[in-house]
Length: 582
Image (cartoon, rainbow, N blue to C red; front, side, top):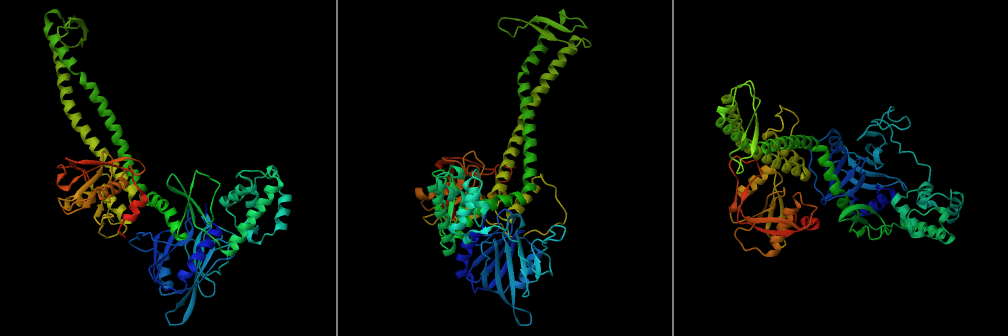
């Protein structure tokens, strides 16, 4: 569901006791539409003004920052670092938040700044106001060409968005509801009637009210009897009471183990098709819901050119390999060429120049069956025989060459598949930079001159702790996989999905005995960071690091190993998150 006004009210109700009075220590802008305020007490307040996920929440997810902070981030740092949160307000049932911040200016005088989040879909914005309500700057500037009715530009007084004109649901009475119901088109569905009549109800909640009243989400008003219409009012009245009293419950709807929706009250309309999971807080629920979506968005935005480069090279290799396999299959019948040469040689005495074919017995056949050999009439019999022998020799040489080239193509194809898996799992800006360098070193990207400044950070492998306390390290890319395996203790255990692309995983044992539970947890981590993440019963090989070798000239991340054992596990996201070292 969209982050509606009531859900926003529930989040703010949760945030006020935790944030009021806290000082802002840092301001970060990890993405174009995201700003994070780091407050005292290690509180991270996320304000997202993106069209797909506008919201405000406390977050525990770490997000990588660009090498050079955007201009809007620098502006916020100038005005807000050191400010205290004085108030967090929301106009009734509006998707708008005002963070009132007390500041001290450069001359030591107290002042006020206001940070406004308009969480309104594609019109979302983040606006900084001075003490008089003038706009200092905003994330998205709106001029007269973009909107004739409302401009959002530095120097203008801030005006909130115009109201939609519908009645706020919290102001409805029983008499007013019955009048609207009597005047409504009887062919309309009950949920559509609620959405058109009231402001503050989301489609999900409207369907839930209709389901609770009539047992169906698509019941029309004309199909509802007096008792069902009475229950519809009762459900609506209970919703109004819930909103007025601030009685909210963070509920995440999960389908096939994945977060599909969220809301602020229990949902029954999906029956057994979706699981209703109650979360500890709205911020935790929003983190869980948006984590995977933000990951996909990061890959789409930052990895689009990398995906395009790797996919293009992979598809070209597939076509090349298909042609090579076709040619290889064609030359497997090359012995027939030698036989034709031998038969021509054996029948010189019967041949004359200018013949276009030779009919003779094939003495290589046990039955000496007759055979017809095509000849070039412009060549002598000796030249025709030499031509067949030359074609045979060429085919024999081509077989060896094609075998070598197909092996190289298959190796490169496997490497590019691993690159695409790396991109899908990339989490930070540094991950994308490392993958870009790897593609450049492999010759799939051109080296560029001086361009944008890149992050200069040491990329560290993912780190986990098993239930028994053993460290588990997982490589983020092929070059890191090589380094991780190369530098590991020879007594440590190396894990990798069997014949499936994935990251190298090291269980750091130092030679200590390891119990079965630890081995299973390490195998599940290895399976999670592979192409088999969504599969069950995944085979994971493990062996001592000393048994893992890198062939000379092999691509990054490519190794061979022997004397392994195999575990069959099913990846578990909750286990991986629980074991991850923060």
